Length: 233
Image (cartoon, rainbow, N blue to C red):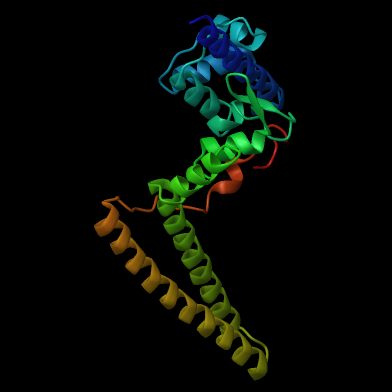
């Protein structure tokens, strides 16, 4: 039990450290750095009140634990991805990802976000990787990446058609039209593949495959605080 309590406190200390760091780069419309009170007010606006004194204790490393609810609302209030408060990519060389086990922040981030596994040595590592490749999240991520590619090529085709319509010469118009047709054909092939993949995953694995609105098109604003630089994921 003592070890669990220590681990909870170490996680809380790390989150508090990153909250304090993020506040340095988060400013209001007047360019003033976000205060602990302003952060508390923002958390309350988001529906999960955190008293200023609670935030101060968290930043000073004396709070015993931090809940998932706290983590999510603090991240939103600071305009950060929640995992940025746990795995400070770009700020630390190593972080404790499990009690007594340290890894590079990127390794921890990929594991926590479902993009990878924690490395193991020997046969255990191979089994873990095999299970990962069979996991639902792996299949869903593959589908989402495919959908993002379709969206990208659809936008590219539209842009080429617009350029063709305003081309200054017949040669330029034909070149843009060819690029647009190639992109359109690629979209058709990719959409057919996605539909087959969706049916296979849905029927064989019983998974629900859906795509969030604007998936893959809102990434950049999530990677930085509007008040200053944050590490790119």
